Length: 137
Image 1 (cartoon, rainbow, N blue to C red):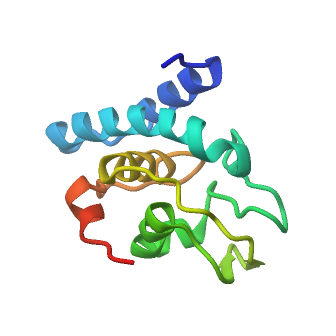
Image 2: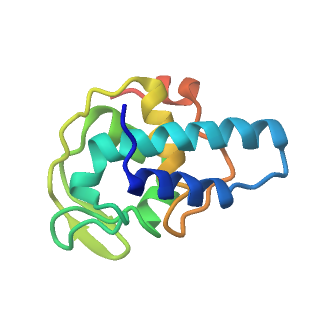
Image 3: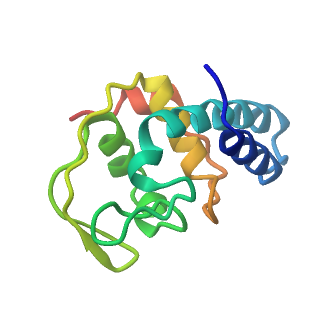
């Protein structure tokens, strides 16, 4: 898979922002973030944009997103199974449907680790493949 310059910059910035308080988790988290950046570019960037800011009134932002950071299970479920219905992100309502992406549990975990550690989001609790596998539709 070919990496674009945007992906390379995103990966480098993500790596710089990782917390090293737990070196093993930090290494695992950094690797997951790297893989998640590729998943994001392939599946998410078209709607949520390279900067994660989304498109106002159409696609919610992931950058500095209260929904993403406060509704962990719901966010995982949306990526894993798609999303219909209204959600509120940073005080704004969105009702655009998100189709299921067909990602594996590992890909969902990786992209969640990437988006929850990018664009002013900070998540020290790594999302694991096992956690994702327990999220039911």
